[in-house]
Image (cartoon, rainbow, N blue to C red):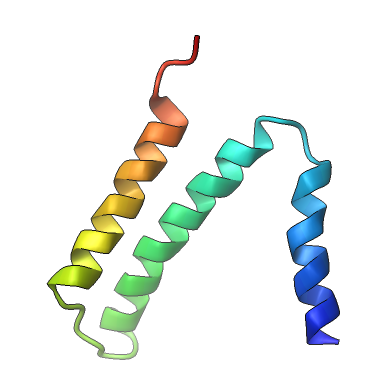
Length: 71
């Protein structure tokens, strides 16, 4: 049953308007950063420098996706 839910979760966004892809990608980047913070604050797993660098790269990607000028 979980597999079916995962498949549906992945397919439903394909029916959204074209700009939804950018929002969905940005959500992914924010999710990565918040996951690192959650692990640090709640689970007491201290992120190493590679976790922090990866989280920053994800947030930079979000900024590019959302705010880079379109032609």
